[in-house]
Amino acid sequence: MSSPTVPEFLSRYTGAMHGLIDGISASNANGELAYVKAIEHAVELVRITQAAGRKVIMVGNGGSAGIASHQAVDYWKNGGVRAIAFNDASLLTCIGNDLGFENLFSAPIDRFADPEDIVFAISSSGASPNILNAAKAARTAGCRLVTFSGFDPANPLRSQGDINFHVASSSYGLVEILHLYIIHSILDAKLQCHDGRDIFNKNSVV
Image: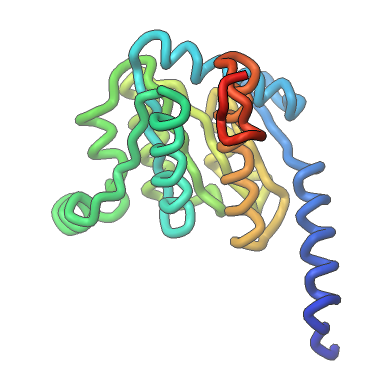
């Protein structure tokens, strides 16, 4: 098969992105959940967490770590929600060296999570041991849990959360972009619909 031209690739890429946005699935402990309802539920969880003075903890590896850092800043700076990502280089190398890479996020969750915090567990595969251990630590700490995964729809992370979002793609890039889209949309929906902020115009006051 010959390689596509760049315009041909972009047409396919854009079409795939539109299709994946329309096909984002969500679930909770009772089974499948309409995407809009899942976003509404996630927004309400974030609002409850903010009102209680609790925090959002975001964890992910690689590109998902970048999403976690980016969104943790947006959630506290723009959304007024206490939020953190455990991505400091010294912390990561210390925990990885001393306690094992599989405990990279579960160990700080054990130390810093409070009951009724929310943990956002982000994993393209939904099968990374350190993210699965973080999900387990979140439950042990009495946290709410929202998961973001892709690849295999039967991945183990997808069954762990109070709300689970799944992107039906095996492309790391597409899954990561759409995880960022979902997490951003949760915050932006809160800002636009509840906080009187116009996210379409630099978060200006409505």
